[in-house]
Image (cartoon, rainbow, N blue to C red; front, side):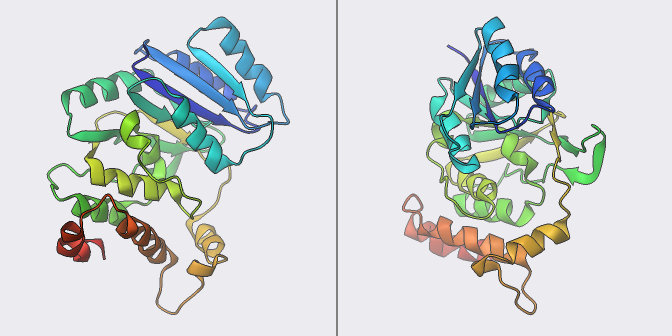
Length: 268
């Protein structure tokens, strides 16, 4: 059985997909499975993926008969995994060769951790050069014992959400909410803190390619188009995003009432 599953959601990723899959099959941890879910691409992404699935038994290609949406494609991959650990790899991103080996042995040794993310992971542009300021957020919860306090720490410290490409325990990931909300990756990371620690490990891990070149100001304006993110004097859309996610978290029946009461202030 594979130790780690790499799930690659794909839709029209032919520009970088060969480099992405190559970085997956080249991992120093060889006991892995690589599942590619093509979301009815209209370019030659399928042909690129088939090249690898035919030559490497660890690579499995699933072709969706119709576009099921980005959100559903990410969740679909989690439920296809057969290994105890899972990581998402974007169809234009690149893994460092030793990332999964570092994360796997760390999680095996630290059973209190539900996810390990690479502290030095960064974003890169289309040219492969690092994007200034775009790095993993410091959401390490080591030493924070109360579940909701961990959630609050994660919510307050998330900026760029490169952390979603950390290595999760598969059984925990399947318990987390895959809701169609703004920033679903933020919500998943926040809820993960209920079940255990999220720990940063000392490795570059991966390089996440920014292909849309959206600035933070543009992102704010896009969010404001949604009803819950309308412009309000003195109300930052990012703060409203946190409030919105905390609303979902506080509705969760997985969190005890006493814990909610004791640590409500830590979430504000």
